[in-house]
Structures are given as structure tokens and as C-alpha cells.
Image (tube, rainbow, N blue to C red):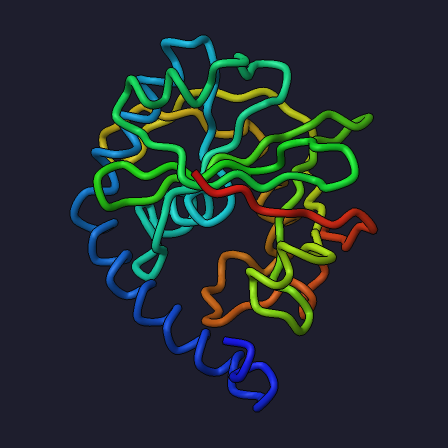
Length: 224
């Protein structure tokens, strides 16, 4: 990988590999995604956690009335005030294996956990309250380094996504009752801009007016 970085081939090679992985995962999602979402909801609800769909999963539910065809995983959000200390252990009891945790290096604050359910991935983003907003931090690719080198040095840049604070309610999603933010429109405008109802392939947040901002803190990965 270091050779690819020096030769300038790292980014295109990684992008090609990711496209293949996304295609495979998207097919699995189409087949088994709803089963995983139902299992996650059942497991988290048993802990008293209101796990709500977020990011691409929320966008698909609202705009496509289902999963986005090219989405490789499921995105859930949970409030930091509702998370039990033994979350990963209780997730394991529900058939989910913790494979990665992203955290802020300076404080150790967890921002995201990724679980594997059979061959599918579930991303759980931690949301925090700030005034009239909620926010979660999302790890981005390193500016120049491959991930192992970045993780062992100065970490990864982070993007903070603000959404309006609101309650959550269960709504129908492909026959499954799942939590969604009451102000779904406000959330999607904050995440994807006012034009979120128009599908845009290879959409980038910096190209649109959203409520995503880069923060100074760097994040790191812990694998299990």
C-alpha cells in the first residue's frame, strides 16, 4: 500500500476495490437487509434503546420507500443518553458481532460502531445533544495516507453533522415498524441539502449547502 501511495495509485486502486465491495454488499442488502434491520430493532429495543434509521437508510425510506439500490449497509442512530455500558455484549446476544469502533483520539469519545450480522454490516452512529440540535461525528478518509498508516499516526479527519432536535416515532418501512425522526424532512435537508429528493450519483456534501462541518478533532479506528 505504501508503494501505491508513493506512486499516486493508492486512491484509484482503493476506489475500485470499494466499488466492487459495495456492489457485492448492495446485493446482500437487497436480499437480507430487512431481516438485519428487524433483528437490530428487536435487540436494541430490548435494552430500552430507540434506534432510529439515519443517513442513507433514512433517505431511502423517505425518498425511495425502501433501501437505496446501491447502499451497502444500514445506518442507525442512537442517543448517547440511552446507550447501556454493555451495548456490544448485548448486541452479540442478538447475533451481531462488533468489528470496528471509531472514536475521537483526544477524548476517547465513541462516534460510531460497526457490527456484522451474517455477511451484512450495521453502522451505529452516536448522537449527542447541543442546544436545539443533535449531532454525530463521521470519520472521513485521510487526506493522503492509507488507513493503517493514518490510524498509527495522526488519525482521520472528522465531519460533524448537525440535525434539528426532535422526538422519534415508529413508522412503517417495508412492513417493519421502525423508529424515524419526527422531523425527517429537516434531518434530510441538514444531511443532504434541500435537493435531497433528487437522486444524485456520487453526491458529495461539500458540493451542497448542508449542516455538515469539519471539526478539529481527529478520529481513530479500533478493530475487534
